[in-house]
Figure 1 (spheres, rainbow, N blue to C red):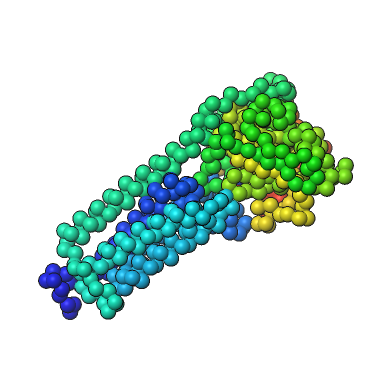
Figure 2: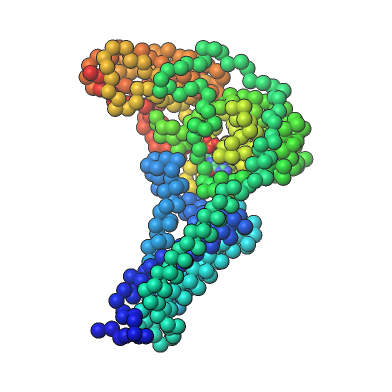
Length: 532
Ligand SMILES: Nc1nc2c(c(=O)[nH]1)N[C@H]1C(S)=C(S)[C@@H](COP(=O)(O)O)O[C@H]1N2
Ligand SMILES: [Mo]
């Protein structure tokens, strides 16, 4: 039998009520942290910071698994996972607080320290102020738990140290809980609203941008390069549909008017710091417009992480030469160009490739629009023929010339190759895998890419039959993917359709299946369909 105190509280419900207090305190902590992060930096919020740290520390295999299963939602899944874990821990701390309220409250402070360490340890953290959201949130949560748990009914186990200030009656507790939850929700939503509308300067600077007229426009696209069939990718991927792969839990919002790009390092005889205006006005180098297909090394055979766009930007080779950079083949000391982004990503490209005459650029326009924030506004790199993780730094702010021997960039530190030219690939877009089709003529169609080598031939195989030539749409450039189609006389039954491409050097796509790690998947895309 439990002791009666103040005539109303008996011990029943002390544990579940404690758990509820824990949840309320945890929610309040996150809400306060969210609100404070709006004043500090959205990226400094504890969930974002811990999530970012988790992304950086996740082994490549697990990351591949997450991308494969959750696709572009992998980050949302991660954040929900963190919140779920925090909710369970808050419940536990609440139960602890019901017995030992100082210990429970101290537990919340420990989480504050973890969040603060994660926030200040991020590569984009520039000041200890980033600890504030976690610290303020934890202090608020701990104080709240201490207060709520202090008046729970029944005797606290650790009663010796804790003198209760009274006991909640039912109405008092419900009122306190509801008020706390409402205040947390309001603070959290307010913080969220500030955080998402944040970067107003950045949004304004993007809105003001009028894309410059390129001095070297893209060559006209042959009319026969376009091919429109239901289910087939368009030649140009609309910005809104363009795949997105990056480690940013909060998309960086960079103000173009204060943005700077520093170019420095080995063999850079005249280091430069460029403004956005320097790029737009052509003072940094020739403005070129080019059609380039971008592909992710994490793309599985037949996967979606590839897209084609028309980019406008400054030719990187001329700019680097103006800074004194020479390719290794001409005696330059640096063989690696390391691009660094505002969010601390590092991407290393071979200097030789960047200077070999291909259209490597600092892009500021994508399909006739300023770069979308998701795709690197204000400036990103694009290098035809190399996977994104070794070429396409978004939100770039620094270029350092160094060597592959001296430095491993972000993904290379995580078991990917230092160098990764795009592998020849082809994909069936239509029909879809497992489609049920009517017998007769079925249009099989898709895309094939081998950036900077071009696509020379695409063939389709039905079941174990012979390879048959597909019809190729015209080539736009060797740096773009090529659309193809194959009118198939489909007979009833279950069938497998397989595609293979041959690149511009005459090398057929390899049939050997290899995983995406360490330098891109190989193998043929094959789908099963049923014809009735
Ligand atoms: N700052 C930054 N740039 C980045 C990345 C990143 O995580 N952070 N990911 C790279 C990878 S792996 C790819 S495939 C391309 C994807 O570009 P997209 O999201 O515009 O399609 O961006 C590259 N640039
Ligand atoms: Mo990628």
